[in-house]
Image 1 (tube, rainbow, N blue to C red):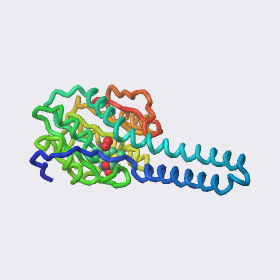
Image 2: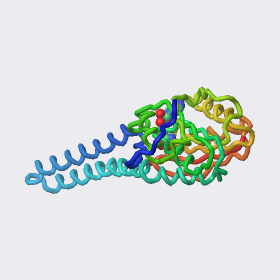
Image 3: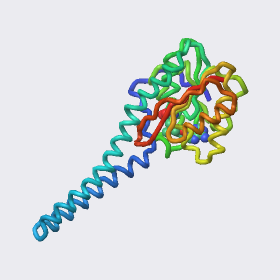
Image 4: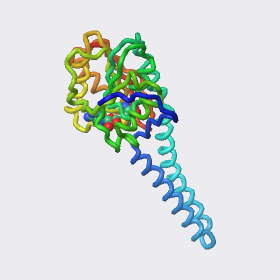
Length: 249
Ligand SMILES: C[S@@+](CC[C@H](N)C(=O)[O-])C[C@H]1O[C@@H](n2cnc3c(N)ncnc32)[C@H](O)[C@@H]1O
């Protein structure tokens, strides 16, 4: 697939992670708070004390779901940009690298990496699952590439993390954010990690951010012969544990 050529106007949109879950948190919050208010107004004249207590308890449950929804939006829109910068900083790029972003979505890491390159190139691949990221399409990624003015450095392609089509020892750097936990089977996740190592050049660098099972990936990396495998401290963006993982082939 050809890279997008020109620079477009507008602001890039890197999408909302797990949009269906976010939507369900807000709709639960709205329903529970609405039910709390209806029950309160129906019962307040006859049973003012119990009506107020029930309303308070239900409102707290509604606010709990609202807080999760707000946290998930903040994690996608604010925290993820900081995570991107930290992950890319950790790579100390020279500027001439060939980089693969596995599960690039709307291009967050691919574009961030491209902005740090002089004559290097980035390929972003994805299977474009709309449940993992809102508006998740190759066209949305290409539009962001254009808007960010890096069309000469980024190519967006279809590709599955478990079956990378690139030769062994091909990339200087492989990056991936929030992708592997979306692969349900442990063997398939391990296969995806092994593929990332396979396409890296000897001495090449790997940087992953993901939720939940980062320790599992570290084990696979060590078993695949990766060196300097390091896990960051645990963070709780999206209300669940996440860690960055860096390694070298
Ligand atoms: C939560 S989004 C994150 C996207 C992007 N990396 C970011 O940080 O904004 C997860 C992405 O992983 C992609 N994905 C899931 N399974 C994949 C697979 N087997 N191969 C490639 N991409 C995959 C989804 O389509 C989605 O774009």
